[in-house]
Amino acid sequence: MIYLAASIILNSYLNLAFKLIGKYGINNLQAIVFNYITCVITGSIMNGEFPQGTFKWGNPWIGWAFATGLSFVSLFNLMAFSAQKVGVAVTSVVSKISLVIPFLFSLYLYNENFTLLKGCGVALAMLSVVLTCLRGKAETTRRDGFAAYWLIVVPLIIFVWSGLLDTMVKFTEQRFLNEANYDRYLVTAFGIAAGLGSLSLIILYLMGMQRFSRKALLAGICIGIPNYFSMWCLVKVLKNYAGNSSAIIPVNNMGIVLLSSVMAWVIFREKLTRINWIGILLALVAIAMIAYG
Image 1: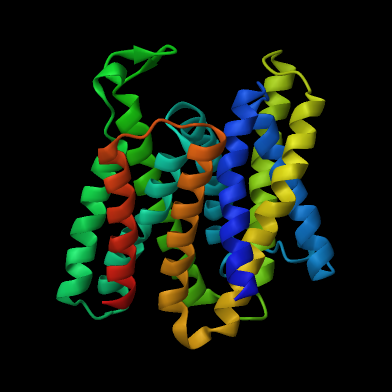
Image 2 (image 1 turned 30 degrees about the horizontal axis):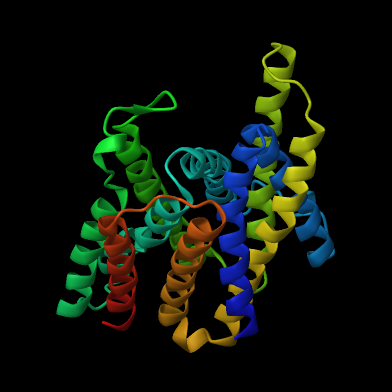
């Protein structure tokens, strides 16, 4: 279970890193682009080859890798924004409870069994998202120029987008991938995210809207290496427990939600109401019900 613990710790670290980036005024976009460049370099070293050797339009999964890479860089930026403005705990909950979306798609695409317990878990998951996102009266107007309705809208977007991304990755894995090409697909997706992000930065540099930041480069490296190994560790644990993957992913998500929420409260003193904590606990229960139902 070392790989599972490592996945939980590394993913929680990423959630907290977003908060630190905002706290020290580091450019989000640059840090995230440098993060994906670091992921590509790290993955290439681990796999012993650079992804350009796998980037062939003839590969049946290349279109899905492109869509995955685009979603990676876009969603990562949104999650960084959410962690800084809404909070680490809320961002963690909505991104991990989004597993209900690939579950619902699996009922249609793969004819997975639907039980009453799983159905209750889905309903509870939806309730947990609402309760986790609720804010007190002090935050119902404006805070730091951030409109109150975005406190709910941004997490909901992350919830839907994360769920659709997980659904897309699962579909690609089921339809096109195996042990021989999964790592290539992952590194290629990271490479596409790095390429699209770099192109955006170059355009912004030329337009005078961005200036190179050494702090962002360092932050990107500090995020990129753990980011790659967080997925690497999860893939490892899934391979080691291939017959029990349906339980591993929910346990991983529960661990990330719990550790991220507690660490955000301890380190950043994030203000969570009693209702928010109830929402987090319901999220953990919902994940368990979906996993073991």
